[in-house]
View: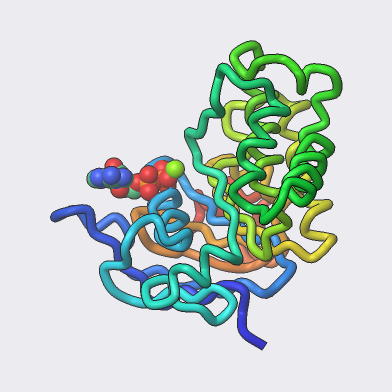
Amino acid sequence: MDKAIEVSNLIKDYGTLRAIKGLSFQVEGGEIFGLIGPNGAGKTTALRVISTLLQVTSGSVKIFGYDVTRQADKVRECISYLPEEAGAYKNLSGKDYLEFMAGFYSENSQEKKNIAEKGVKIASLDERIKDKVSTYSKGMTRRLLLARALMVNPRLAILDEPTSGLDVINSHEIRRLIKSFAKNGTTVLLSSHNMLEVEFLCDRISLIDKGLVLETGSPKELKDKYQAQNIEEVFMEVVK
Ligand SMILES: Nc1ncnc2c1ncn2[C@@H]1O[C@H](COP(=O)(O)OP(=O)(O)O)[C@@H](O)[C@H]1O
Ligand SMILES: [Mg+2]
């Protein structure tokens, strides 16, 4: 069986800046895997390369056995990507936005309707789904965008800081939603700079800093290894 994700010695340069300096990790199908690290660590860059949006400088990335450089189209069929700073079309209602996006993934109007209906369910914005996106709070917009990413049932969901900037209740809802999708077989790769939330969310994590993986393991393994109370403490120990 191919791994869901196989990143081997990935290097990514922006001009003369080396943002990723040799990243390697593997993710099994059905896992929730987190790239965890401070701002500037290279998380977004890594996710964008894995999503085929940025070109590899060197090294290799395979998604379900498909190479992101040579088989980008195949990779795109398997994945759904939630960008860090995404917005939805403000003048559409949440429902119309989901229907519009569903159109890109369907062959006929029935299929489009089914996908959009699934999105409406995932977003669970109740009656507000009919209101314009411009009237949504940050948490509501994030839920809408996550619903857009998940409604197509991707084999791999790539979520860049899915809970960033959200309050406790919205973050909790989003984490619960991500968990329920993973239970149904979706593999999830996400990033977070919030080291405390990942313990609940991720099966395994890679701690990254300055474009390098410092440690990989389950939150429990890492806490035991460093005799730490939480992942923040683990991180402070490994960067020492
Ligand atoms: N488009 C870009 N052009 C040049 N440098 C970039 C670009 N995007 C990110 N960087 C740099 O690459 C490094 C990693 O950034 P990023 O991947 O956004 O980190 P993170 O998501 O972990 O905060 C940072 O030093 C950042 O300034
Ligand atoms: Mg980022």
